[in-house]
Amino acid sequence: MIPIHQRQDTIAQVFQKRFGRLPQFWCRAPGRVDLMGSHTDYNLGAVLTLPIGRDTWIAARANHTRTVNLHSLNLNADASFSLDSSNKNAGQSWIDYVHGVAEALHEEGMLLEGFDGVIHSTVPLCSGLSSSAALECAAATVFETLGGWNLAPLQKALLCQRAENRYVGVNCGILDQFTSCMGREGCALILDCRDLSSKAVAIADGIGIVICDTKSKRELAGSEYGERRTQCEDGARMLGASALREVTLPQFEARAHELPAIVAKRCRFILEEHARVYALADALTTGDRAAIRELTAASFEGAANLYEIAAPAMHAMMTAMLAARGVIGARQAGAGFGGCMVAFVEEPMVDAFSADVRTRYASATGIEPEIYQVTAAAGAGMI
Image (cartoon, rainbow, N blue to C red; front, side):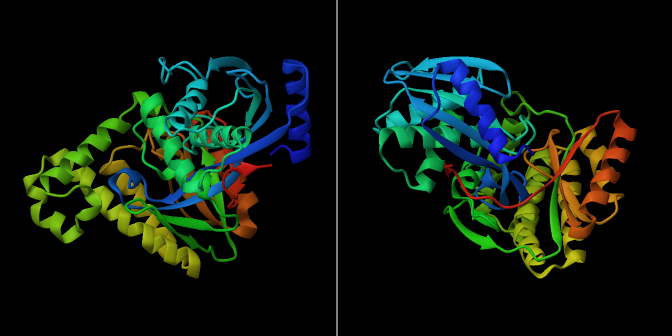
């Protein structure tokens, strides 16, 4: 990770070069990793989520126009849009995430001001750690600061979700934006996606959380994400429920034979995964290593065989993680189809674990992974 002051100096220098002056203020929003609860969010289930120190920064300055001018340091790219134009090319460019946020805020009657901005993110792009939500929530915070109005964090999250659903074209649940806006430093959160309530979850001393990036990128708007969601919605409807959250496992077991086989597989994974959220929260709080190992293994097995979201790179990474020194348990992160995975590791062994995973994964795939420990970070706000 880049030291904070070095990162800030670099961004400020780029800002001055692009716009001829220094930024007025800085906003940030974190990425996230789901510790348990793959795809449960849009089924109105629960997710155990962790806002992480990897985040997106926007250095900004009002330009007293109706135009937003942005430079992405990560992509070395420039883009602009007018606050008076609609987002007609939704999902075609990284700037659509910011333009979509502007549209969602405008619909709510928020006063919007044009600005110049430089974006830098330490959340790996297209990796399953919610780089898009981090950008959306940081952008909403910039607009909030410039407009002189205040949004409740939950409202901000919902508007950013609307931006991604409506203007980017990804029919995501609330998990990513909620975590990025509502994150609390030092703890994980159980998010109940039915009523949007949350509960802090302490993680026992001695357990480190390590991200293992397969370097296999995902493109959710064009992937099977939407198909999985439709299958779950079909299953809920056939079972007479508004969402799978309303169905118990015994109810499902009694009627599973009535569902198309593929739909039954998807539903079974979601219902079992939802139960694992609460079980893992308890295990992490008490430090129950055996339970952590069992629950994470069951989650990955279900993701691979029932939900079918485990790409070859994920299988290779899982093998490498489970063979590494210090591992307690490991599973998928994000929506699957590649991207990042997460491991629970004995804290004193994190460096040894990381070295082992790098060697084993590179040997198996020829790809150099990125491995790093994460801790819980605060939600979106000013720097």
